[in-house]
Length: 87
Image 1 (cartoon, rainbow, N blue to C red):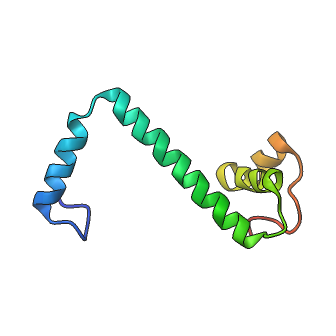
Image 2: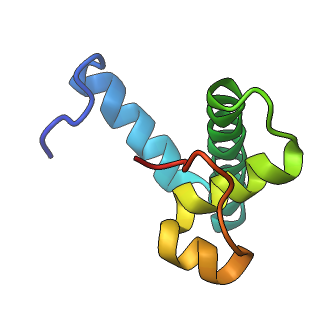
């Protein structure tokens, strides 16, 4: 297997991969859920920095645009606030 992490030695990467493979499925799902929530929080923080006047509802609406794309987010959640989230 070719190394995929540029800042990690091949031996350390091998140990990491073995550890992940050894986890029970429920723990892998739990880790994915935690990572998803972390990414969502980071995205919301970025949106709050870009749109400081926006409240929680508007930030969640803008997050929908990032996750779903402009067209699908508008179909699901209505028009996007101005200015648009995506250029």
